[in-house]
Length: 182
Image: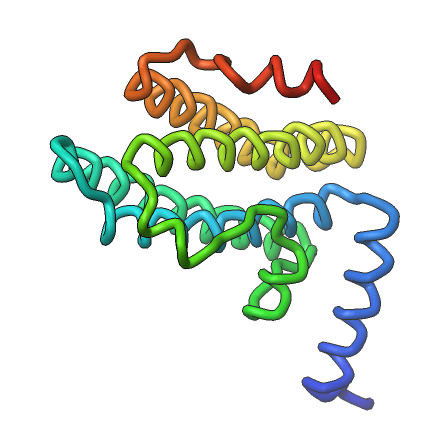
């Protein structure tokens, strides 16, 4: 009986991930979400540390809560992927390769309003992947993964509404209109 070495197992994982990312599967789409959550957590940490202004203390609390939520969501999604015999991205290289959210060190110097608006758009971008992953999970008969993703969509929608309210906006203000311009 031969046992696969860690190197061979990882090589097979990378090969399968490449195939999955060119033919979208629920697992591959959820891998993008996990990577986006990693970047989102970094952005929330930066915002929490650097936000300034009259409401900085309240925003630090909110950003801290959202940061913890992002960590919890990433862990829960990764666990479901593993439970479903799928692969979760687990290295910085994979997070960088699969994430669609972007971070920039200069953002720490932006206004509190800018930071909140940027996060609104990040949650909305993440929802594009979440809704696609839900459809794929349902198509692939993965109800547990679909359920976890539906919870993430619910949380993201609530976060968008909360952040938009801080900006004096309705939940979808500036989001759906941008889609129509494409």
